[in-house]
Image 1 (cartoon, rainbow, N blue to C red):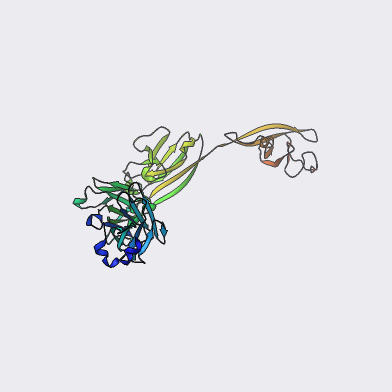
Image 2: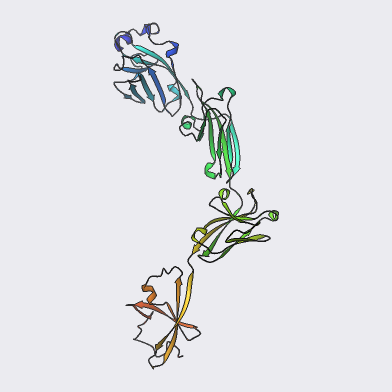
Length: 401
């Protein structure tokens, strides 16, 4: 019983059961994280009370029991099927390091298992390997390990906290070199990376890599507008040292992964390229909706950083078609005037039907040099500032033919 155990604790080191070397439990935890203390017990004691105590297991050394389940930073669970009693210590502190005991309460002497908790600061590392790359390039983070660790579990994560690295692993390996390869990197990929190697009965071994990503210089951006069904020409300046290089135009949001649509060695379908130093031009005919997007002017297949490159954003619109239709109207004096109606229509015929009933500008005289603005009023086309049949000035609005 607990009471008799506490009273007779002066004989603790002699009377303890289950404290052989094979029963000792080693726990490794990082500050701020969790420590999981798991102790096994013999079959037949599934329903007995278990507890975790520290130091000498005196009256004030009981940290938590299965009856309580939770006390301060300690939480218990008891898996009867596997006969494993576990205590989770949250928000681990450096002062949590030391000797503990898992206990099973029973008549006579309790059953004990010795536990040692090791605590380490959640940071890494004494030395850092630095890698510098430009945006859009590829980088390989190769993790070192000892010869005897060739078959050990290895992993790589982004960040600098060893305690959560394994849960956030980007890649893992067991029988080969552990390497993380990142392609078309951006500034979001910059930061710390940890290489972890699992060690039995010890903290995992970590090495740290610091990745710096520089802006890929130098890029000028241009916005170009085209019309569906028509042609557009894109102008691409290039550095003088690329004069003899193959020129090309590629499409895609990212330069490093864009797909070539034409190059200077041969035309390709609706795309044709013309060279004229210090720039080349690409003409696209028969523009369709899928032609809109981001284009890159290329004059170096390696996209060497520090050169001047051009990024083009092509947007497409429907073409507005202007038609002029002559109509006759009778003036007050009985004469006729020929009116030229100018109508701007979108090529997709998207103008609303009511809007078709009143043309914005009505031209007088055959040279269409004068106009009066009209508006839609009760489904009739009337002058913008007066009725069609009232309040006419004495001055004629339209010239006679």
